Length: 305
Length: 298
Image 1 (cartoon, helix red, strand yellow):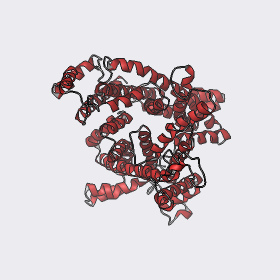
Image 2 (cartoon, helix red, strand yellow):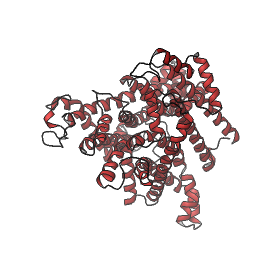
Image 3 (tube, chains in turn orange, red):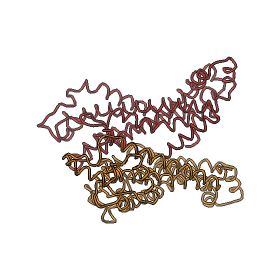
Image 4 (cartoon, chains in turn blue, yellow):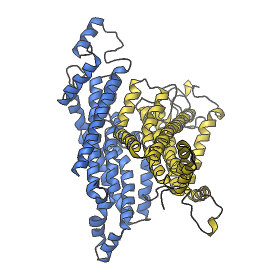
């Protein structure tokens, strides 16, 4: 188990290094830079700016300098927001995105798990059909259609919520719902499929023969194995909740990481782009690793020897 | 049933004699009402988008400045936008682009994924391990982030859009094809081909890959909606298709901007997009059942 963990950690670090390097050089080789503005800057000012941010050094010195500072946890100054460091900007925006993502995951699991369980236990009942219809709609109506529709109906039409913003607790409701619903659909589908497969197995028949109650059979015996596909899906889903927030944060004008990333890319704010990419990549890898571990814990057959 | 593909797993029974596995699959598909609905809706959408612009009286840059922001009427079935364009006409042109992006990027993903996965699966051993390790590493990348970055930095080029989306979607195809090739290459007829002295390339592309066609078709059908989603997502953020061209994603973005007063500008493109995605998923699921590809999940 420890060896498995070590090898996965090593692989993640290699991927992370690859991402940093690729992004760093990609940013430097595209035309245009953070100081190209509509109004041309006088050459001496430009020279001073470049000297200040170390742009006049050879590229490899810049690269290793960046890596060295990164190792100490310093992501450098922002090119566009003067007097602000990337660390500060990320510290401001990340909690917002995490909160949104957390609520969305709560919606996805709180709705998807019970729905999938009931659908599996009452197979071919009306609730099973309702759940699969819900799953299909979730598949076909993307967040950037559902989001504006929800705003239209619940904010503009009914007037229950603000159409945008992130100030009051009520502002959390619509964005979390829209983002969560997209993931509730596959969660319920996977829960149903996983449970149905487990419920057919011999050890469940044994439990039934021993007279265990239906509730005990599902909760104590079937759920652990039946949720394996759901857990496998949660890694990509957690990543999706974070990246899906690009659209949600744009629609609802939420000051989170996703919106900041899109803006920084448009601004050619190199250090901010790099910092955001590194943060996203690190989170994605942490999720995948956590999912692999949970997987191995839930299903001993998946454990590497 | 094993995972060796439709050619091997044909059912045997008194009345299945003289029927090919493909005919079997076709019979199964015809019995699936949702899949038929999906196929019919898709055909309708594709034909309307391809031929519609010629049949309608106005072109996408025809403006009727006296008729801006009109709700749906007999003259303009889906209403008009801020410049007096007929929304239905814009949707047909946008649909062409959305569908074209879906098909072309899927073709890119298909080509890379099948070749890569096929070679890795057939060669096996250390080559396979190295090739699949590359796929593993790429899988772990935050691709949405990269696609956004690419589109911003390289000026929202149309061809780049295909390349970027295709580059994201080939990974799963490669994994599926590799797994199938690995199980098929152990079969006796492949050994026979090897004994006959055929080249490795000929065995892989002429003898093995045709038998992986089932999973490839199924997965390709499910890749098209995924690709269309990425395109619409990018266009919604203003990073995909650029004016004067438009796609459903662009129309949805424009519609969302003005939905308070002109909700039809959001509802019609959103409905067209959702119906297409739904149909593709119905058809993909139906094909999966009919071709008996990994049908255990649900």
